[in-house]
Length: 150
Image (cartoon, rainbow, N blue to C red; front, top):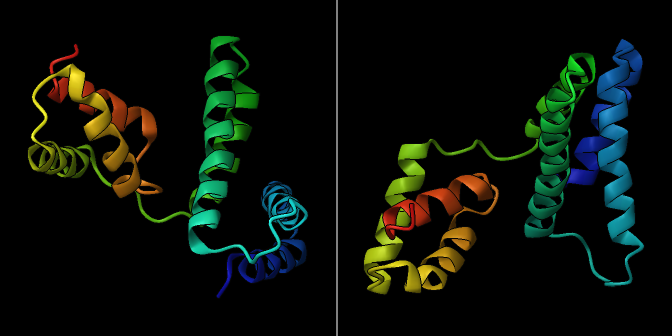
């Protein structure tokens, strides 16, 4: 089932059950889908577009959580965390740090990279391979660690 159809079904369910926070979050996802449709690309949203959009929405929530916690606004941080949990339902399961590290090590070995000068050779393919499956910040920190940039 396409993401748009799935979101619309979830919105109906949330409306019937009276889950306000879930409904609000699902509507924000639907708004992003509509925004994509009106972007002028003149094509249907594919799975890669869906992943990119959901990751962007999730990243905004993660950033907001950090900012609210730094400002000691725990009630707002909790709300953002609850919204993030709803968004994560539509993303593929995230890989563990060990799994991410193994994939990056394989990419490093295949590319023949040895130090920080080769970061681009490892970072690009790593982000492509782990898109939607791991946080970009985690990937970057592991790549730096593996290439000796710490």
